[in-house]
Image (cartoon, rainbow, N blue to C red; front, side):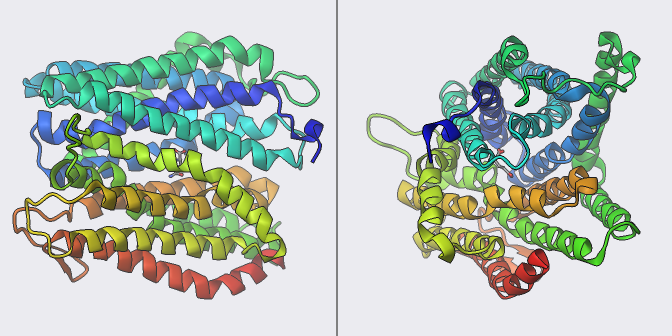
Length: 498
Ligand code: GLN
């Protein structure tokens, strides 16, 4: 390929930086979330796990709304800046929560407010920044795949730096210091917003040189007025604060809400009379694939919950001259992505016509995830409670999980893009996000099975009384999903190409 076809518009690097700082904020905060809950707010692991599931589940649900509002009313740019500022507010509220952590009457409401703002803000930020990347190029441009790979590097540069910096300033062994992690996250979010504000006008242009991310011409102007936007985001944040609080403290409704969303979308799409049977078959593939990724992410996203408990309590982190904070382990996935994404990209090209089709790659991704858990299950086999194992088990596991991610995640998104009829593009992207939301909520449920102090937990009849059994649960789940998907792959491939 010549250098001219390889060259990317400058706007891509603006989006890279904006997304990098936002992911720093999100993953940095997530790296210390369950530690803050258990060490500073003194909540138990079951509660911390459930909260983690509700929070991260909702994080993937609000993009449905944020994408919808941007497409019809605000445009991408406005939505990104608004969402980013709401998230920054969330981090600073959490900073004050961390400051008053000893006083539950102050810390608790601040905590839910902070989380609610993060959820509301992310909904406006994440879908809109991702969609801008593709808009920088003409339709069908060969560089788009490479652009998303570069963008994925931005995500993971932030994902590596966030836990590292937030862990360093927040996880010091003193409960009062957690607040500095939230503070660092808030500052990172402000840098992200500032980057977007400073450079969007100049560099975010479509191939014809028209400004990108503007509100649609026919959008009602009153809804773009600053006080109206602020009022809307304020009300929305109140709703998301209530949503997370109710799911954690009152009644766990999120699973039902998500199932409702999926059923509704399936109904809307499959009852559409204008779609022909080939289009419907392709849509069916999107649903099937989205179903399988639930098994992937629900095991993968243990990173921010049970695997952080494991890093904290059962991993020997003492290097002699330095004790590695448990939160640092959450950087590993991103570090491996940055290191290995080019290798995978190269591998697929090298395989040429032998490159496996998307469903096979996804089955392989699930198997690699299962292998990662098998590796760590081996490491803890027969190890008594309270004994710490080598870091190599977590590091090796995260490496295999990352290989799995690189097989499954980047192609998942493009698969949805390719298979969805234009008319239902966003709605079917919503299926993908909802599957992610479901998986994250489920991750919280699974993390609550984490065994400690001889306690036995069980899931669908499977008893877990030690770490080996806990990790083997994920081996069986992801392994079984992988094998089933493997055998379905041929059929799916037929449906996709028909
Ligand atoms: N790590 C990626 C991100 O933060 C992908 C996460 C996912 O799709 N669940 O964007």
